Image 1 (cartoon, rainbow, N blue to C red):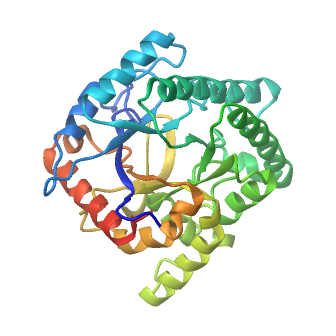
Image 2 (image 1 turned 90 degrees about the vertical axis):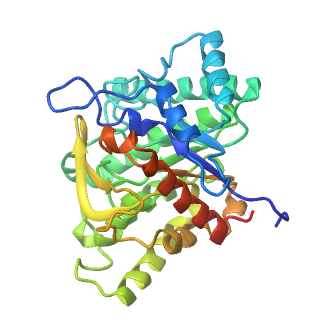
Length: 344
């Protein structure tokens, strides 16, 4: 363990985009520069965010932008005082990609999205703005029920797509992290997620991205009752035993980590189907001891190449995101996690 080397604290830019849009009932997206400014304004006892994690799609980024345009974005981010960390590939239908469980054309689009992300990562890296992190993916298939029609065959298709994607990433010197979230087919329970990771079997190129809000619903078996480790009326002792059981299975694969809070409910907006509800860090209905839970995932983090942690607060109302107190409370939670578990 290197003395005084601590995990860097990153904020995600995609809460300004996910669930936002111009459809009825949706709030407008928040621009990249505004998200950067809100992040830069946050400070707790002299500590600020060290960097940002970044979603590679409009309106923040055109994934087909020229090299020079990507460099200008990098310069904007650096000018606000941030390194760039993990990137989110635009793998979903309606962006560049399509279902990793789909037909050959759909899967080809998925792989195109991974190639685009690797290209942008290379530009950021060579420009000096990005010094670490992964590229995040998921199955880009909302149809959990569709997956269940032939779970074994559909898992095999996702595994094959992910293997091809992992080879693309490896050729570019990148690692992919598959996000565990109950809305993604084949990744909607801890056991099904583990089956995918083991099926790909390329831990050097494809690992797991753990989010505290989403993985809380894994323990409850929200979209896979057969894999529940506790029921909703659990005791504290039952919770921690179940949490340890889940993290012991998934932690060896975990190469990217999101700090978050969850109130035990699901939430969705726009095309983003119901999934683990992100809550403000100090939400009185929050179910998680954020610092303690984070420790289960961050044990031996350096051995898996984790150099930063990121806050994720998808689908917060814009008024919440525009409130400076939101970000200072989040940053304080991040500092608490780092101080407890963040020496690498």
